[in-house]
Length: 557
Ligand code: ATP
Ligand code: MG
Image (cartoon, rainbow, N blue to C red; front, side, top):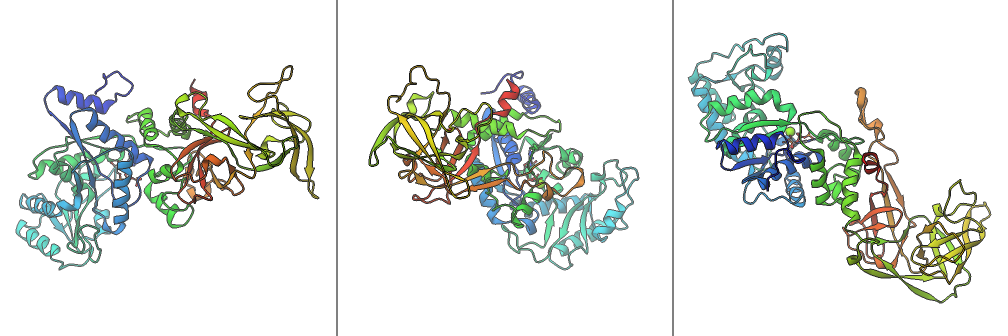
């Protein structure tokens, strides 16, 4: 249901809608999410999706999914499919309201004829460069095209012949006849149609050689779908007068209202489809769904949940202020979701063998382990313990730094869900590298600390012969600076060379054998992980979703 205007979820767009409903201007609201199918959706799009579909859920209304497919040379069916899959995955449903701007090409053409008939559009023979030269600047008015006063009949004839394919690319365009002296450059007779031969449109094939511009197509598509509130990002603010001009001067059934909000920018990554396309096509990442990408597909593979992304979009809010959001806020949203929902497991990422000399060789002892320290409903499991185990190399130090609470020569540590062990001997290879530890277990310490002894450290472990070998992919930020490419530099120079670390020796506890791709858990003391589709039942692959340390939460609380 709707929140009161002063609730944290409220924003200026909700206030406009509530005023419109209260004033009886609309009984129902209609929004749309209008992606161009020229790339995969990213987290910025998620903000727009959550906003548009969220409004339709919270107020009586609907949200359409409409592909703004007016630029066929950059668009592709692959993107049409991935966009639908991603919106669905985020938890939204457009019902039977899936539209393509290209569905309206015939109507748009009819409206162009209408504009020509009213003396509001003309065929211009200037080429693109000349049109630009005539347009003027912010301080100088534009100059009229010599074709601006072409007779209506001649315009109609030429426009019909443009459609019929009589003229080559760039020879002519259709322009709105608005105001070459307008202080708003968008109103200086903007181009409405261009000739484009030889492109195969993913929806209309080779039916058209005449393509409408985005600025003409978008308002009319909104109006044809009777969108009430057409929500877009701030860079379209200066286009709003043209938006209004289009819906005011053709015979559309409705007059939508355009409202702008500020786009999401995230630190340590890039968000423009042009740059994301470059990362993929030049092989800087392994495809659109590389877990380092800020795409929905990448975040999904990284282990993000739809709920965490919706939660993040809620937390960032909707305003008109320019902003760059800390990555830690996104990480905090997924951490909160996973902490409350996924089981704990033990996984040793960089194994070091420990032989526990007072445990008989053939013996395997099943240890009961809680799946979650706070959520009893997640149950328990058995973890096998044996003479030979592995611990993480980082949990042993020969020369421990100050405050080190884990295993040291001659020191004691508790094995999670098992005994306290003491490190008796350190075995090294010829190069002096530690290759094995010899230890003894205090078999009287299951579930309790021995009297009179302080064992501070608790470390995780896996039985060496029973653990499941797997690959673990550790991800770090895509870029090494908060604002990649700042100051005009090439953003590729700011890519983080350590954004991916692959660990091939890892061992996970046997309960993770045969884990299904998409399954999530917390590796104790390491982070949240998700099984990747690259793995097999014999050799799973795990992606790091997010580490355990909540830098955002610390800073805020
Ligand atoms: P990009 O700049 O990444 O290429 P775009 O605006 O060209 O994005 P579209 O497919 O046209 O991509 O976007 C579909 C919708 O998503 C538009 O309404 C657009 O305003 C919105 N959108 C795109 N990027 C963001 C963002 N970073 N934050 C919020 N909304 C966004
Ligand atoms: Mg766009």
